[in-house]
Length: 214
Image 1 (cartoon, helix red, strand yellow):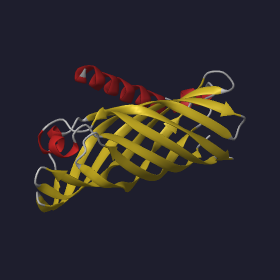
Image 2 (tube, helix red, strand yellow; image 1 turned 30 degrees about the vertical axis):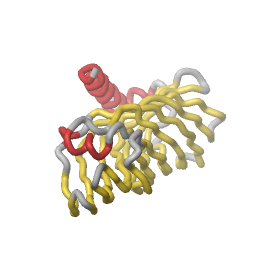
Image 3 (cartoon, one colour; image 1 turned 120 degrees about the horizontal axis):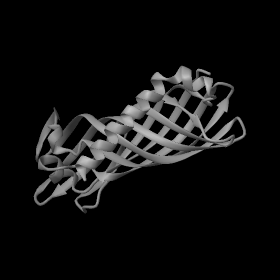
């Protein structure tokens, strides 16, 4: 399963790269929009275990590029390539240990979104995403110790994937957008991350602003 997901991620990155590198050819064929975007993230971790309480979102950011390939007048496929911050903080209570952990997980992410156009100004989007974990950090304060340190990425699943949905509203070439992403892959793989996170999955809300270059 891990091999197939990694293969999908590599193939998706290659496909997105080809879209971006061949944007001039695509424009000649009528690509609807190609541009840049960025904005704020509010990310959470969804836990199955009962030893976690007082959860708080991590406020972060995303930035990247997108393009569209039209399929008919009112529909397009929109791949994006983003840098994404995710994670959250929560109190833990495992056996005799209590404290608070803040996880900071940063990803390179590729959403591929079906885009339904309601005229020229509004787009409704939905589709899958796949992410690659670039780095990880945890801040701990409690019985298990205090301080901030990097966690070996081998403690985490380096590939995350899930589903996303939202909408964009255009004002000429500029736009604002809102989206929610729900991870389907457990974050922790083994070691300390598995002990602290259990079967937790990523969830993140995005508020974006962007600009179409064409």
